[in-house]
Structure formats: structure tokens, C-alpha cells
Image 1: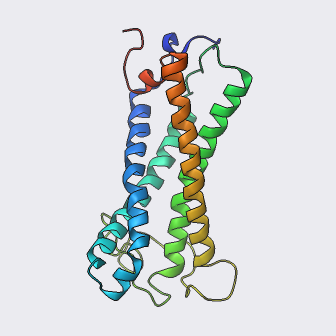
Image 2 (image 1 turned 135 degrees about the vertical axis):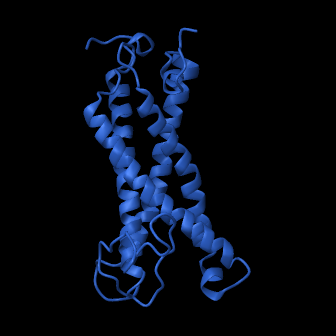
Length: 214
């Protein structure tokens, strides 16, 4: 396929690709605040304080949506494997192409690694290491352990147990990846706004499902 303007390219983003993109974005807008609310109310939840209900609901949302996001990103990767991405606008230089593809690749990697490290942290800490199983929706009430659909991917153990592979490693990695993902997301949004307001090449409009020529 020769280089040409994205707005007139015969191969644009398909409707399923757009739904997966914006569905993932909406899920992240819920998932991240729920994760922070869960962390900020942890002591309230463990002590049965007045905000224990918030900790419970935030945990359910964060854990359940994390599993759904993991399934969604696997579906997105499969879709991208079967459907080539549209060409970038013809005026995009080599540096811009490298930056765009690199940010997209890193975002995909984090969208895969974030739920996996969260899953590993829950596996290491819950239902078997002296802690209750994390509550989740859709995957049975507790999600983990006997009767649940979510298996442990690491052996449950107390958070302060000796050894490298445990809750602390996965939990810290999960948090660091959240901040890295936030930085990449700002770059991604900034690039989209540049395409729309400065380059005016129709990239953002096409992802919104609109005809840039109108």
C-alpha cells in the first residue's frame, strides 16, 4: 500500500476496531479511579470502618474490570494480527512514525502486563495466604479458589514471606506500570490532538467514525 493521506486511504479503522478502542478507553476511565479508591480505603476495609463499603465496591469493580480488560486486549491483539492498521498520513516523518508506533506498542504491552501483574498480586496474597479471596463479579462471588473461575497463577503466600516472587514484587510492578501507562496515554492523546488541531489530517475523526471530508 502506497503512502497517502489517512482520510482518503481505502483501508481505515474498521467498526470493531473502533469499538474495541473506545471501549478500552472507557474501561480505563473507570478502572484506574477504582484502583486508587481501593488502595486509599484499604485500612477502612480491613478494619470495618465507615468507608469499608467503598473499599468493597471499588475492589469488585477494579478486579472484575481488570479481568475483562485482559480479555479485551487479547481480542484487540488478535484483531490487529488479522487486520492491518491504516497507514499514517503521507506527511508524517520518520521520527513521527517511530514515535507513533512505539507509543502504540508500549500501550499494548502495558494493557497486557497491567492486568497480569494485578492477577499475580491477587493470586499471591488472597485465598490461601491468610487473606480472604478477592470479591469479583461475573466470575462467581469470590472469583479465586474452589468454585471460582479464576485460578491462581502464582502460589498464595503471606505478603512478608521470604523470597523474590511474591505479592510485593507484583504489586509494586503494577503501580509503576500504572504511572508509566499514564505518561504514555498523555503522549497518545497529545498525538491525536496534534493530528486534529494542527495537522488537520482526519486521523481523530476517522477513529470517531466520522467522515473527515464532510
